[in-house]
Length: 461
Image (cartoon, rainbow, N blue to C red; front, side):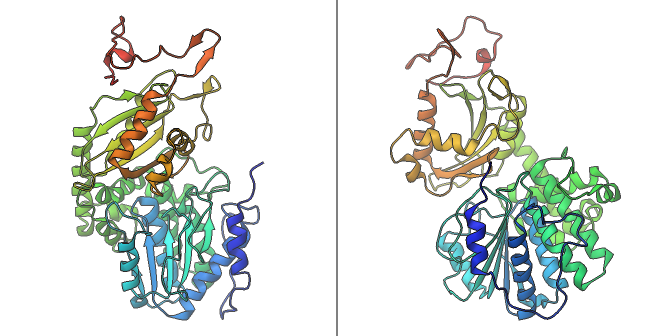
């Protein structure tokens, strides 16, 4: 049985007595799903987070939102943005900050940028987390983290609402929706606002879980919302929202601006929408760059569990290429597809890489189910085979989710990691038989049969 994470109880203890505030007290009676069963997070953590948002609005002091750059981050951030305004926070007191390309909220440059906003409250949405000093140097600044990324450690003093240990793991957009809907209903009966929260939840969730995701319980029933705008329009909106942050220009703000100035997914995707024109142009750029990079042949690790595709691009197309190859590449032992991009941060000597579980992956001789293959643990296991390598790669290594991870590491460290993978011995299938012939170091051995997968996949010693 999975243990309840200690982090939530630790954080809840810090805020076990939230301030008494004027106004209605929301509960789950009007939300289409209750948190009493511990989903998408503990009821205690959800209640404390609602008190935090209510306090933000009543305090009428500067609030800074830090949403992540993808569709789930943008949509969860905008749900929080819309909720704070509905609760009465003055628009002039609500600011938004996006981290720079290749950076994170814990970097010194980002901490300085956050401080320049002068916030009294900080809310991070979908950013992932780690053990570190407080986000703000001023100890009186309060911080709320709304997230679903795998983590058992958080910034000191932060209040945490995490879905990471509550299966099935909700997206940050779903978590924000369930957090905020009762708050909005308690102060406003506006159907327009509720519909907005619903389509934001749908778009953010599609962005993380894919267009084929089925809204089965315990996820909220969003069939009416999807029918209202159509699945095609919702999918198109997600594609457009994700495009700007993938370009070499990295203009995430254009996606946020489009959300701010549209009232529905249908309006967002309309070619006549002036605020969405940049989104369409960005998507075209990303498609062209993905096509340029997508034909690089994979190389296999020594144990056959990892396929590596190397690219060099200023655009964030490595996750797309990893996903594409993970869907199509087939091999008996393959578990993970990794795309490494040494051109995303030019001149910095860094490699950005994205990893996805291969669709053909097997666990115990049978097709793998969700959770059977843990990419984060795989990456850490390979790194631990070289003393000190994992620590050397730092906190930006093996971040994200079990089925979708990656990192940003120094190129020399990445090459060391890949050399470990290349030298990995194949796993034995049974007595006297291994999964593949041992790779002969220093030679290029072509198989006699040329119509096999190995016949067209380029190998490197």
